[in-house]
Length: 321
Image (cartoon, rainbow, N blue to C red; front, side):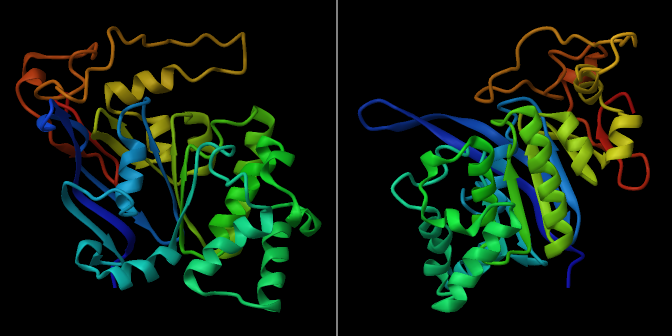
């Protein structure tokens, strides 16, 4: 059996751009363009980057909620692209998703018990009194009262709705939970509660977590390993210690320099990136970051850098090395 629960190899997701009466393909959006990501059992992996870098698309493609254009996604070493519809349906129980927006991710016409029961209906699990016990257990687990099961989403705050989203993700007792910006829509104090809840649930249910975020402070607090993405490419991978204490790629260094420091007396050397993020429709040649990189060289616009290994899984794709 593979050491990885979930693994993407040379994953690409290209969205066609169609124009005209005949809707002919005029180009592609290169949302994800050849990345390798591995999630080990029991670990929390973070994917970070600016908005539009392809991190959410990568997460959805790894669940096969979006079909990859190219590449392989494996579950415990087995190619998910070769699985039948029946096998994929059974695998859905093992992978669940927490959505970014706690308001639009819950059906306003269903009460809490119906929302949490829906995955059980789809997969034929927990019927009768066993289901009632399961619903009560899920609500208690995420810090809510089972008596609230007959209420509707509009009767809850944003933090409570995200707790319900987490309870729904836990409903089928999965092995992997992917959180797509799970706290970005919440107040800072509520963010801390939800992050602590996820960490507790990881231990309680022996979960593997894939957290997609642009908030480096959140990722540092909860993740074991971090993948940094820029314009559809992985530019650096390593443990949270490697990434935060010894960042190698200029883009990672710039991201970290932008993180606010809580001590106003402490000076910080900020690296201000010039220019805008290039369009994923027509990405730059060579290293995609070279148009904004303060350390760019001639070779950066000509050749795509290969990953350099700095030991213990720390890699960066940069011509500086």
